[in-house]
Image (cartoon, rainbow, N blue to C red; front, side, top):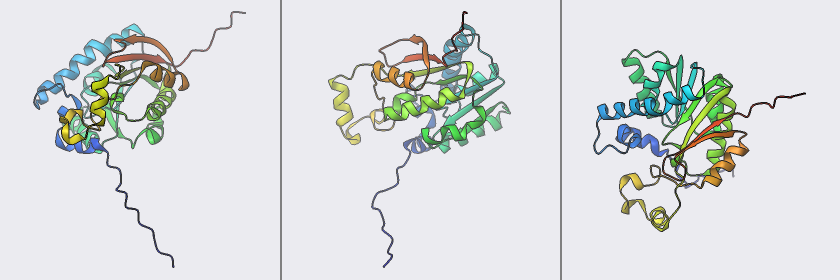
Length: 247
């Protein structure tokens, strides 16, 4: 008898699909006290001018292709696109990607595109057209939500492959220490926690040693750090350059 065995396990649901439906603005920019699209978009402008544009000047980057991992609806991608030939937003939530495409279409923005990925496993396949051509790859307020360190390392391997030889990656992590309060919060059921402390959206703290181990194994080198051991610890990474033979 060839009976099919049915699993009782429910398929894993990407929480960011639900967040995109509930409130894509506040789940991306949780610092807002209430949903305010104007405040949302203005916050993106400030980040681009305060963080990303100085990075372009400091590292003398080309401005051909920029790629954002965890782009949401394009809070950073759209203002950055004024300074790049092309910006690509990558996100795991179809709802975010569709909203981003809609914003681009409604505003006549032609140099911003969005790609949906299932996760680190198909990131390279979906973004394969940009292998070795990305001048800037950046990710802010994203890696802090990824539950497994192995997934972070997988993403870093793909970032290395996508980076141009003279490009840089600008990546943010939460590297604060895991105190008693943090550990208690991670063990409590979601029903007892405020919504931005719940699984899927809450910040996951990683040690700098763990992150830097992933970076080394992915074949990249650290060329800069900002605000280490904080909730907004950023690394500037690049592909190691070939040693110059002095002979």
